[in-house]
Image 1 (tube, rainbow, N blue to C red):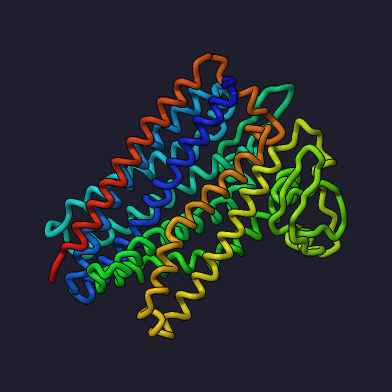
Image 2: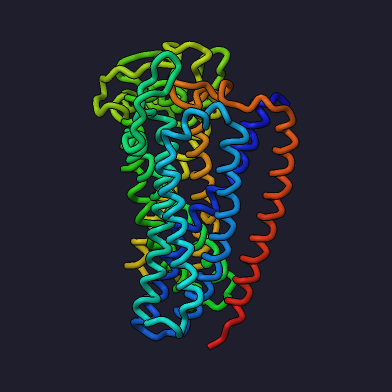
Length: 433
């Protein structure tokens, strides 16, 4: 395996792993504090049990996210020294602020975990809110760095030198807002449907039904709202990409020929060598409308860009189709949930709980596909139009062995976390009142 490929595989693998735990760590505290609030208001012991169970999950995912996130920060320097040599001073601010947010989150989590019956009830509950806000803030700040890679700003690039650095302008880059909004909504959607699906499965199996229904309703409410809002965020992102990264948009849609009134493809099999897409459903003018708000707007095709500046079109296109397809399903599921609140008889049917059980992994599949679109779609650039990924990789040999080691260690970590979560669910099922 080439050094560049090994470095890419290692970075992709660790990002795919970390993003799951990062999202759960961002979102689960909000489920926890809602349950806690309901206990404070009703003194229903089920909500107290649920809160304490979820807080253990928050602690486990906090530690896992911290470990995998720390590994990623080291990887930036070890795998991509050419990138960090120039980018470090420019995007150091969001990383340093993310460290501060993480520090606040850790302190607040300590107060929350060990504050039961020791802190005033309201203050104790507020520390849980701080955990959630700090976690989301950390995620938004990290996305700022990724946004800068897609929309480099805050410096002048003259004769291969990065001059007149403005860290604030770099952090507040043009891509940050749309990416951060899309990411936060995706995190709530993915985590919400995953947690709701786990509890729906327990209801389906008849285990501690009342408690699991309470948990389901908290999680799915967040998930449904986020899923319904996600298409708005996606539209903003698409319009931003159409202007800043037209080749990425063309790859997302496998759009090879520049034309006005460009069609939107649903599905399709890409032949990158021939530059064709077969077996697709074409919606006339819709790509032009979605990208520029005009059915007759011109959309640049891949053939307008040099071959060495195009990403891997099939991967980007298929990942985009998966993301949008699953996102659409989850929007319908969110609408289904809100309708079911009025039609309470639906919740008495096993099919209702089976639907949400099956949807449990869908949000994270869409989330991973979205990150593939973002990262692969930017290639061959690590800093868009400034630095190629091949120029940033370490010259040191043997990266492939590091990749194998990360796969082994992270697989063991995933098994351990899964075992801990299964144990938590079993304890929850055995709780009596």
